[in-house]
Image (tube, rainbow over all chains, first blue to last red; front, side, top):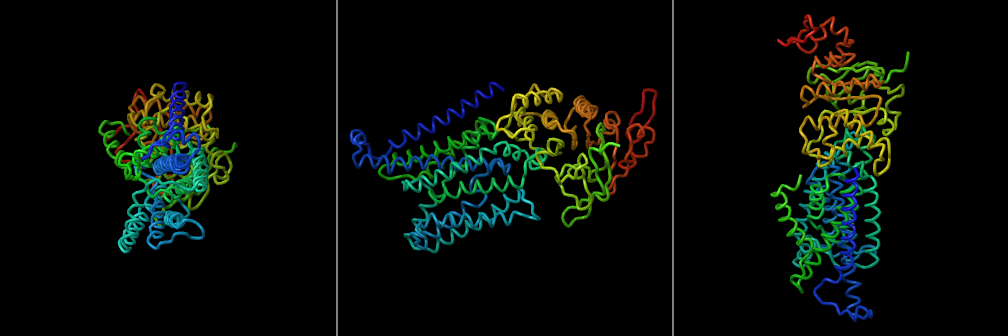
Length: 329
Length: 256
């Protein structure tokens, strides 16, 4: 037990240190080299590039990657499906559909908020209720009915996205394709602050119940006879995971792979105890996405490769390598 | 007469829009009893245990735990009194055996980490189920029998006074089957009310205090272990090819 605690501290502490290091160092990575004297003297353009562009973008990457990896870990435990992702239960496809509609119809602002952001949140909330309604039978909710309802709604929204995509003009169609890859961009400090606050609060709520997710990972009967309230747990888990996925997709587009690969790989190394897995997945998922974005904005500079494409490029082959080595369970 | 640990009255259960699986089941289980639940496949053994554990809501009738209706218990409070071992459990779990046993402590403490006391109780349970040696191994690397012992240890770590075990001896070798049933008998002797589904007539006759045979949606036979030795007619309820034979060394179950 003692050894166990030590290795837990090492992993959690190491992940936290990497997260902080990424937040401090990655803003200095980018296509244009910053002039240190200007940065020290807080002179433009270097100072504002660092602060307004690179820092907000790095922080967005850290928290978006964290939110996606945590939502993935949560759904993998809750649904007892090692291949579950934040997108499995349909909410992010709903968010994408809303965003794609906003792009197709040129809704730049809706009620003072960015059109894509508003469309994505509206789409996600709508799908949330549809999936919950479809999955509830006789007042009962089970993870398998959630999974099936989510996959069904996913394919419907996916088809609608293709339809809208095909019917719009060239410029909208290009914008939609670009958005669907998913990537990071500089955000308004105010938007970022709201986003980080929601992510941190929701993540804390999820991690607080880690023992309950452990129980559900074994089975619903198992959890119920150990005193967990299964229906309430599934509902909160589904809503919390969906909030994390939806607000992230609204800001970044559907970035793939982070939510699947990070918790999956960590489970092979750390074991499936969500008390350790969830915090580490959050921290390292953030580091992965922010680093992928830093790579994407430098290797082909001045052109940028979206972070969503980099995560898939790195994540796919890495996963195959791990499977061949037998390092995942 | 003391309040029975479990009081089952006229319980009926059916799948939504299906025929009844159980109908009119009535039974009391007292502290100190170890009941073998027997019967053919599909006779409703697991369903009965699920209804008593609160996992399935009976269509008719009622279940009371320590004199109080099952619905009136808060789930956490109930889990401190009643432990249930389901029949099928996940095998591909990347979690250490020890962590799995510690899950039995969940209803006792709302803390994020278990206390030293919880660890001690979990280790004791693992010791009794002879699985302490592999406490640091991942559940996914254990054999079927080893895993079953870990799951049983987790139920014991719950320190409940009612134990419902659905085929606890599955996958176990002969020696471990005996160990498993004597551990449960030990719990009964210390005052727990235990029910275990089993198909092993010998195990039931050796360790249990009472045999309940389910057939035709209800309880076909409900006999004490001693009475079962004297009158083997209860065997007919699940097979015509099993009989009891008295020999100089005791009573044997004979397969034909």
